[in-house]
Length: 562
Image (cartoon, rainbow, N blue to C red; front, side):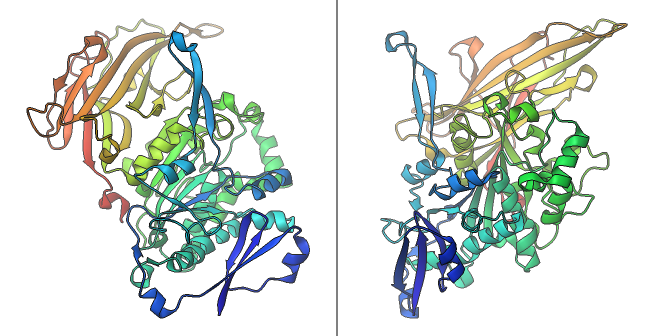
């Protein structure tokens, strides 16, 4: 008995135990390539020489929405469905180098393959069979649009999710076994990592929340982590089109199957009752629940760099997806339907990056996304950053309303990008509070670190935090309100370094400095895994305010249920 792989043009259509169907032959033009190889015997299976190496599970990329037939055609003829896209941008250089140069990023897919820390294999064209190392570290593309293009018919999102199910539950484990990978008893050691862009995240959720539970399968058994980039988990809002017209067009006319982004249709394919928001993963306490803390959502904010769609989507978006629709939660919707009222344990992990939905400044082909994703998937430290004992010192004038934008930017030395960026200009996502509602404890970001990424020649890892507070004031008028110019009342940059900084005093040390204080490093010691130290003093902020960084091991099985 032999196994047959059917190849069309430059892509794998459907590997497995099959016969070529006449309708496929009639509808396809081009050259077919047949690949015959014998099935491995039980004796061969006993000679398996590789094992799954957690957390380095196979990575499956799931692409986004291809609205028109021409886009599906382009997708079909792209081996990697757009995930091999690169990015080249201008960067500042010293005066003697011409002031401006080119900054080249080869893309996250290539980075996962070329970095020695990961060493992933490209499975295309017998990539596993000829790979020099463990083929379980492999990269796959879910090509769910292939059949749509071949049949000239756009299938449903449920059918696309079924393609994904077959890939991760049948094709990948079969290929791994046939390249000598031991998946454990009953394949218990096998899982995949899903990385999805745009609608691809909804395809993944349809698998996790609908197809697998419907078959009595626990999605935790199959999916190790879910990462989404620019996914409209809460739907797509065309902010500059009246609601009644948008609803009529998408619900009645349904051009290009666009109603898959409307809440009623989303609840249908995600199997969500009406008391759950469209961006919910559903209940978190059932045997087939998928923990929200297994999810990382990358949220874009550069709507100006997107295509013409930005003109109907509007600001506060990546050009297509509103920022407050680009993340998932767990459990029921709050009674007041306020998205801000979900509890912390109901929220996924997320990172705000100043990138567009796609294009040259797209969210997929960016340093920012890759740096966040690699640390979430393979890091060993979780760091929760916040301000505590916070208050604003102002004497408000009567008749005026005061509100404040808290801005926070986080970067890691040698990462070439902000891993998290909350600022009003240009991102439109500062944390805004009225004066009377400024919280005493303000969460800033939960990030992930990987101590193994530090270069061997470096004594320590170094991080940068930028804090900015902007005061805004509006005075009520008889005919219209008067808005005063904004006033930055706090603007400081903090640096921290972690490692064996002092060779004469072996051991891990943590030090910080405020750039305004020059090269003055101060050591800080943890108290119950929390590093606390004073926010640099300024008359506008309370003297008692502190920076708090809570550090813990990652992954945390209490959160991820691994």
